[in-house]
Length: 289
Image (tube, rainbow, N blue to C red; front, side, top):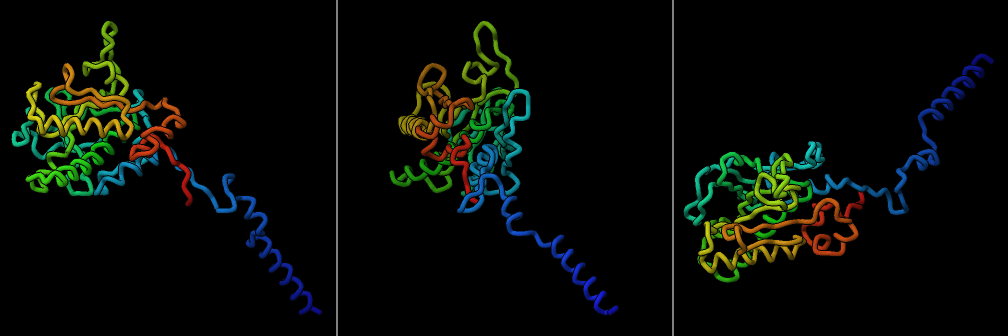
């Protein structure tokens, strides 16, 4: 009789343990995420995570990559800084015909060279102090520079350029100038920011100079032609407008990208949604785990 009672007690304890540790299938099913379906859970990363993944796909080094938190716009101006480090050569690239100082270089790209260089002739704005912009603009600037380099090198190769591979890379590396300053100082009379342009106020526009450009309008035809191609390419992937070969824009060109207020429905239908800048605007977010 004693043995029977002991066996019954063990059965009760075992059943209790099974009830505690074995999760019924129905209960497990009810705890799936709200966006689950017959094909499994759907993961929707944030726009910042998509931007980080987009730029990182062009960057070779692990230490130079962006993360989602970097694009969170946590400062009061709602801007983030285009990442760069001090250039190895802080002088001018006279062999390229450049007359403004190169003070920074972007992350190393998949080809082992910097994706872009940073230039500025104003000492107070060196070290990237003028390289702040809206998150999508910072992303778009890097992607544009990387995509243009590939297209440019392919064009030079097709045209049977006599340049070495190293010099093709140099020639096709965009030199980034002003985006915007971290703060938003604007002259109340002229509407211009400290960088001299109204359009540099919000951080949606960037000054760009391909290698070889010098001050003034007397540019070699091959340099002008290549620069014109660079502006056309910017428009083809979603830039809203460019300024080139106009007053104040003979030694560089001006590129503006859509701002953060542009509806996704609009972006999805134009060149942004169909090209390499889509991720910079957080488009195509739905991905399976």
